[in-house]
Image 1 (cartoon, rainbow, N blue to C red):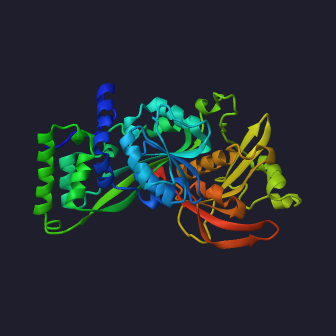
Image 2: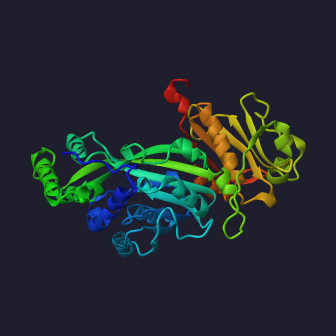
Image 3: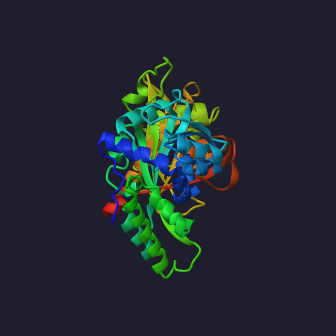
Amino acid sequence: MTTSPEPQFLPDADRAARAGAFASVAGEYERGRPGYPSEAIRWLLGGEPLEVLDLGAGTGKLTDALLRAGHRVTAVEPLREMRAILSELHPRARVLAGAAERLPLREASVDAVLVGAAFHWFEERAALREIERVLRAPGVLGLLGNAFDTSKSWVASLREMLGPPAIQTPGHWPSQEVLREHFAEVADARFPHAQRVTRDTLRDLALSRSSVAILERQEREALLARIDVLWQGNEELAGAGDATLGWIAHVRRCRALRGDACSEPTRRGERAAECWEPVRVDAEAVRPLRGEVLRPGQGPEQLIFDADEAPETLHVAVTVAGAVVGIASLMREACPRAPAPGAWRLRGMATSTPMRGRGIGAALLARCEAHAREQCGRLLWCNARVGARAFYERAGMTVVGGPFEIPAIGEHHLMCKEIHAPGARAGTC
């Protein structure tokens, strides 16, 4: 017997029944389900503490990883039985009853919304509207799910018994195309990790599936008996007290809110998150703001960078009423401390003082990173002012080496980010 997966597209009544079945297996869910690796959380959110919403939090598998990473967590979960376990295990989290389609949070109240193994239970459009409402600019939406690492034969057999996790079924997440209507950047990554399990853990994992929880007792017992036979009959498992179950965390990161939804007024009449569209300009257009923000008091020659006029260099700007209020430049240049092919350097990123804190920097950075990817880039790097370190970390960049002084400008960190070149898979890079 192979159980049916937990699909996105169920009739509303069936989906409600399947989702509600988790109430009867909350304990099994906590004991049997894997958590999420710290590397995935850092890739999503960077290294600075943020206000994070764990949406569809269950018993707190993702909440646990977020708290260990130092973030401040609000966990929203509709089922009382799940919330009871979450509250007991993670007292530092703020735990609220609620649903993705109607969040119990005020507008622009969190820096990031993360969803672990739950989005396939949401009504997509309503959930995305609510997520946009509660995110503050620039905003991060992170989607996570665990898939079996079937490189071991017994894990492949277990997957055959249980069926694929939701992460491996069609429609488990909104598509990249849909998400790009809401966010300037959408990227995917995978992170291997492992869970120590016993035979009882595998039984709990099976029972924690909604498709198993709704089975008649005789069918459930037959499935559990097959798991017992697997444990007893496999060379690696037979006679062992525990074993290592490999998982691969699939992660989708969406950053920098944009689109019509984020420019609408909020319900309370507050200013909504603004959406910026950087445009390509020439080098002359970015130099006045370089002088105003980055190199005040320096002569015109100090505002000219060596590769400004190179054919491959990209200069982008955000304008308001014809005035340039944000700038960035992207140049093909090797990174001195992290040699790698396909390196692109971000330089001269600045926002005019009255416009800071409104998401312009995030939009500029996303535009430059997207351009580097389109050019088959593999590494994005910059010399970041010490005070801007947290901003770049939220964008997934990491510090390489110690701080250093740039004369007449100040102390900096070299920061890097490996980027995926889409063309590489198509054979064009």
